[in-house]
Image 1 (spheres, rainbow, N blue to C red):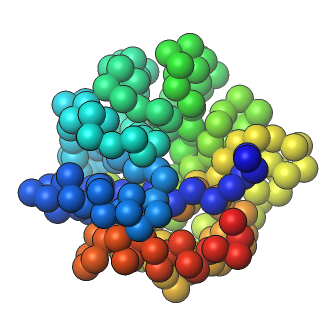
Image 2 (image 1 turned 45 degrees about the vertical axis):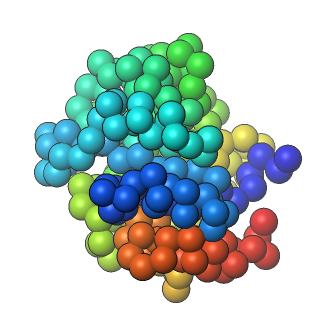
Length: 223
Protein backbone atom coordinates (compact mmCIF):
# COMPACT_ATOMS: atom_id res chain seq x y z
CA UNK A 1 0.00 0.00 0.00
CA UNK A 2 1.24 3.50 -0.86
CA UNK A 3 2.02 5.17 2.44
CA UNK A 4 0.86 8.47 0.97
CA UNK A 5 -2.42 7.25 -0.50
CA UNK A 6 -5.41 9.60 -0.30
CA UNK A 7 -7.65 9.29 2.75
CA UNK A 8 -10.99 11.03 3.10
CA UNK A 9 -12.01 12.00 6.63
CA UNK A 10 -15.53 13.43 7.04
CA UNK A 11 -15.76 15.53 10.18
CA UNK A 12 -18.67 14.35 12.30
CA UNK A 13 -18.80 17.75 13.99
CA UNK A 14 -21.06 18.68 11.05
CA UNK A 15 -23.18 15.51 11.21
CA UNK A 16 -26.77 15.33 12.44
CA UNK A 17 -26.32 13.82 15.90
CA UNK A 18 -29.90 12.59 15.99
CA UNK A 19 -28.92 10.40 13.01
CA UNK A 20 -25.26 9.80 13.82
CA UNK A 21 -25.16 6.07 13.09
CA UNK A 22 -26.82 6.66 9.71
CA UNK A 23 -24.46 9.55 8.91
CA UNK A 24 -21.42 7.39 9.68
CA UNK A 25 -22.79 4.47 7.66
CA UNK A 26 -23.53 6.84 4.75
CA UNK A 27 -20.01 8.26 4.50
CA UNK A 28 -18.57 4.75 4.72
CA UNK A 29 -20.92 3.65 1.94
CA UNK A 30 -19.71 6.63 -0.08
CA UNK A 31 -16.11 5.46 0.26
CA UNK A 32 -14.68 7.34 3.26
CA UNK A 33 -12.01 5.39 5.13
CA UNK A 34 -11.43 7.82 8.03
CA UNK A 35 -13.70 9.66 10.45
CA UNK A 36 -12.47 13.00 11.77
CA UNK A 37 -13.43 13.62 15.39
CA UNK A 38 -13.02 17.24 16.57
CA UNK A 39 -12.60 17.75 20.31
CA UNK A 40 -12.91 21.37 21.50
CA UNK A 41 -12.64 22.61 25.07
CA UNK A 42 -13.87 26.22 24.99
CA UNK A 43 -10.38 27.37 26.02
CA UNK A 44 -7.92 26.70 23.19
CA UNK A 45 -10.81 27.42 20.81
CA UNK A 46 -14.03 29.34 21.56
CA UNK A 47 -16.41 26.44 20.98
CA UNK A 48 -17.08 23.23 22.93
CA UNK A 49 -17.83 19.94 21.17
CA UNK A 50 -17.67 16.41 22.59
CA UNK A 51 -15.25 14.04 24.24
CA UNK A 52 -14.47 10.50 25.30
CA UNK A 53 -18.03 9.16 25.87
CA UNK A 54 -19.08 10.05 22.31
CA UNK A 55 -15.86 8.63 20.86
CA UNK A 56 -16.38 5.40 22.78
CA UNK A 57 -19.87 5.03 21.31
CA UNK A 58 -18.68 5.81 17.77
CA UNK A 59 -15.78 3.35 18.06
CA UNK A 60 -18.19 0.54 18.95
CA UNK A 61 -20.27 1.20 15.83
CA UNK A 62 -17.70 1.65 13.06
CA UNK A 63 -14.56 0.07 11.65
CA UNK A 64 -13.46 3.36 10.09
CA UNK A 65 -10.07 4.77 11.12
CA UNK A 66 -10.73 7.26 13.94
CA UNK A 67 -8.75 10.44 13.40
CA UNK A 68 -9.09 12.36 16.68
CA UNK A 69 -8.15 16.05 16.62
CA UNK A 70 -7.63 17.55 20.08
CA UNK A 71 -8.18 21.33 20.00
CA UNK A 72 -7.64 21.56 23.73
CA UNK A 73 -5.16 22.92 26.26
CA UNK A 74 -2.89 20.43 28.05
CA UNK A 75 -3.82 17.56 25.72
CA UNK A 76 -1.33 15.28 27.47
CA UNK A 77 -3.81 15.04 30.36
CA UNK A 78 -6.39 13.35 28.11
CA UNK A 79 -4.42 11.42 25.49
CA UNK A 80 -4.58 8.10 27.33
CA UNK A 81 -8.36 8.26 27.74
CA UNK A 82 -8.88 9.12 24.08
CA UNK A 83 -6.74 6.19 22.98
CA UNK A 84 -8.60 3.87 25.36
CA UNK A 85 -11.87 5.23 23.95
CA UNK A 86 -10.91 4.15 20.43
CA UNK A 87 -8.70 6.79 18.80
CA UNK A 88 -6.47 5.30 16.09
CA UNK A 89 -4.61 8.59 15.62
CA UNK A 90 -4.43 11.48 18.09
CA UNK A 91 -3.50 14.91 16.76
CA UNK A 92 -2.45 17.62 19.19
CA UNK A 93 -1.76 21.28 18.48
CA UNK A 94 1.84 22.44 18.51
CA UNK A 95 0.63 25.74 19.99
CA UNK A 96 -0.55 23.94 23.16
CA UNK A 97 2.64 21.99 23.90
CA UNK A 98 5.59 22.83 26.11
CA UNK A 99 7.38 19.58 25.23
CA UNK A 100 6.13 18.32 21.85
CA UNK A 101 8.53 15.34 21.71
CA UNK A 102 7.27 14.10 25.06
CA UNK A 103 3.60 14.19 24.02
CA UNK A 104 4.33 12.55 20.65
CA UNK A 105 6.14 9.75 22.51
CA UNK A 106 3.23 9.46 24.95
CA UNK A 107 0.79 8.89 22.08
CA UNK A 108 3.06 6.33 20.42
CA UNK A 109 3.67 4.49 23.71
CA UNK A 110 -0.10 4.09 24.07
CA UNK A 111 -0.21 2.33 20.70
CA UNK A 112 -1.80 5.09 18.62
CA UNK A 113 -0.49 7.14 15.72
CA UNK A 114 0.54 10.72 16.52
CA UNK A 115 -0.37 13.88 14.63
CA UNK A 116 0.75 17.46 15.09
CA UNK A 117 -1.44 20.39 14.00
CA UNK A 118 -0.64 24.03 13.33
CA UNK A 119 -3.04 26.97 13.18
CA UNK A 120 -3.18 29.46 10.28
CA UNK A 121 -0.97 31.98 12.07
CA UNK A 122 1.74 29.41 12.92
CA UNK A 123 4.59 29.31 10.36
CA UNK A 124 5.24 25.99 8.63
CA UNK A 125 8.85 26.11 9.83
CA UNK A 126 7.71 25.46 13.40
CA UNK A 127 6.47 21.95 12.56
CA UNK A 128 9.49 20.93 10.49
CA UNK A 129 11.67 19.59 13.37
CA UNK A 130 8.89 17.19 14.37
CA UNK A 131 8.06 15.73 10.93
CA UNK A 132 10.38 12.70 11.38
CA UNK A 133 8.65 11.88 14.71
CA UNK A 134 5.00 12.07 13.70
CA UNK A 135 2.59 10.04 11.59
CA UNK A 136 0.66 13.06 10.33
CA UNK A 137 1.02 16.82 10.04
CA UNK A 138 -2.24 18.78 10.06
CA UNK A 139 -2.51 22.21 8.45
CA UNK A 140 -5.52 24.16 9.68
CA UNK A 141 -6.85 26.12 6.72
CA UNK A 142 -9.40 27.97 8.86
CA UNK A 143 -9.22 29.29 12.42
CA UNK A 144 -10.19 26.27 14.53
CA UNK A 145 -13.35 26.22 16.55
CA UNK A 146 -16.24 26.59 14.12
CA UNK A 147 -17.42 24.74 11.02
CA UNK A 148 -18.45 26.39 7.77
CA UNK A 149 -15.58 28.89 7.47
CA UNK A 150 -13.96 29.82 4.16
CA UNK A 151 -10.59 28.33 3.21
CA UNK A 152 -7.66 30.67 3.97
CA UNK A 153 -5.69 31.04 0.68
CA UNK A 154 -2.29 31.36 2.39
CA UNK A 155 -2.71 27.72 3.44
CA UNK A 156 -1.68 26.74 -0.10
CA UNK A 157 1.91 27.79 0.47
CA UNK A 158 2.05 26.03 3.82
CA UNK A 159 0.76 22.73 2.39
CA UNK A 160 3.23 22.87 -0.49
CA UNK A 161 6.14 23.67 1.84
CA UNK A 162 5.43 20.87 4.32
CA UNK A 163 4.78 18.40 1.49
CA UNK A 164 8.15 19.27 -0.04
CA UNK A 165 9.94 18.59 3.27
CA UNK A 166 8.17 15.24 3.62
CA UNK A 167 9.20 14.30 0.07
CA UNK A 168 12.78 15.59 0.33
CA UNK A 169 13.44 13.68 3.54
CA UNK A 170 11.58 10.53 2.42
CA UNK A 171 9.31 10.64 5.46
CA UNK A 172 6.24 8.43 5.92
CA UNK A 173 4.21 11.25 7.52
CA UNK A 174 0.81 12.00 6.03
CA UNK A 175 -0.29 15.60 5.44
CA UNK A 176 -3.83 16.50 6.44
CA UNK A 177 -5.76 19.63 5.45
CA UNK A 178 -8.71 20.75 7.56
CA UNK A 179 -10.97 23.74 7.04
CA UNK A 180 -13.07 25.12 4.22
CA UNK A 181 -12.52 22.13 1.95
CA UNK A 182 -15.21 21.83 -0.70
CA UNK A 183 -15.67 20.17 -4.08
CA UNK A 184 -14.28 23.22 -5.85
CA UNK A 185 -10.94 23.33 -3.99
CA UNK A 186 -10.20 19.75 -2.91
CA UNK A 187 -8.24 18.93 -6.06
CA UNK A 188 -5.97 21.90 -5.48
CA UNK A 189 -5.24 20.81 -1.89
CA UNK A 190 -4.32 17.32 -3.11
CA UNK A 191 -2.22 18.62 -6.00
CA UNK A 192 -0.22 20.71 -3.49
CA UNK A 193 0.56 17.58 -1.47
CA UNK A 194 -2.20 17.01 1.08
CA UNK A 195 -3.22 13.35 1.22
CA UNK A 196 -5.67 13.29 4.16
CA UNK A 197 -8.71 15.44 3.41
CA UNK A 198 -11.12 16.65 6.09
CA UNK A 199 -14.51 18.02 5.08
CA UNK A 200 -17.51 18.68 7.29
CA UNK A 201 -20.43 20.78 6.16
CA UNK A 202 -19.66 20.00 2.49
CA UNK A 203 -20.23 16.31 3.27
CA UNK A 204 -23.08 16.32 5.75
CA UNK A 205 -25.19 19.05 4.16
CA UNK A 206 -27.40 16.94 1.92
CA UNK A 207 -26.78 13.30 0.98
CA UNK A 208 -23.61 12.33 2.87
CA UNK A 209 -22.98 9.16 0.85
CA UNK A 210 -23.35 10.97 -2.48
CA UNK A 211 -21.26 13.95 -1.31
CA UNK A 212 -18.50 11.59 -0.18
CA UNK A 213 -18.52 9.84 -3.55
CA UNK A 214 -18.28 13.19 -5.33
CA UNK A 215 -15.26 14.21 -3.26
CA UNK A 216 -13.52 10.92 -4.01
CA UNK A 217 -14.29 11.23 -7.71
CA UNK A 218 -12.62 14.65 -7.69
CA UNK A 219 -9.35 13.21 -6.36
CA UNK A 220 -9.56 9.72 -7.92
CA UNK A 221 -6.75 10.41 -10.39
CA UNK A 222 -4.42 11.08 -7.44
CA UNK A 223 -5.21 7.73 -5.77
